[in-house]
Length: 282
Image (tube, rainbow, N blue to C red; front, side, top):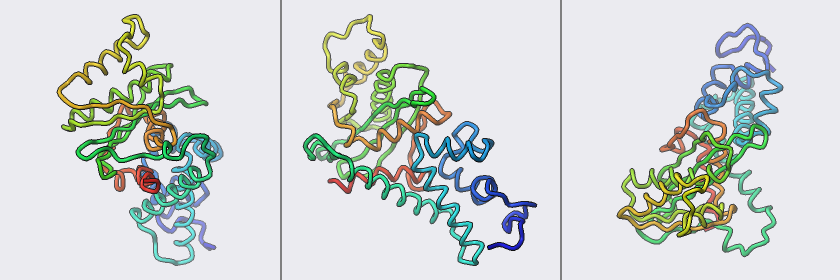
């Protein structure tokens, strides 16, 4: 136990719980590297409300893993162990998240054939785009997101965002539109697009979408994309095989940016290592 009440790292007069877990220099660096600076009021909320809101929110797993890592770092520094550097901390957080995610998946009671539950590699030469939309039960905000991987299952790129809509279907269509646009811009010309909302997939594949449909313009934009000179298959998949896209969609609900592209999962945002979990089931 530390004898001096001051922070040994920044000489703050009193190192209270908030300083230890959120406001101190090491904690600030950790939360910024994890991307929590994008969340409104994250660094100014009352401590009790801060913990409760984020521990029950859409990115609770990342928050709780970060909280545990910061607490362990503080204890190690007090008893004189070698200080944990930020990059090592981010890797440990990633492993904690993967362990939790694996526990959730492995203890889920599936009613469908297991073979339909897992992410599968696309054919050789193809990229696979997984997309999803999400709604916050507390704020009713909507988000969308997705990930692109190659035929070896390697991470290529991800995205998350939100839009001014109250319709979950529109968020799901936005995810497909943004994902296809990103794929085209990156030069990928063979794409398998998977989305677990079956209604969105059916609308895109329909030949008779009314011009009076509430999302007619967005659907027309998606169809225009599909008609470009490339090979794209849009398919339905089950949610259990779409966890990373679902995660990004939930992230989109919370972030301030309208759309963010994630290019470096290990350095920019370790929780994107959720993608690696898919390899456990292939």
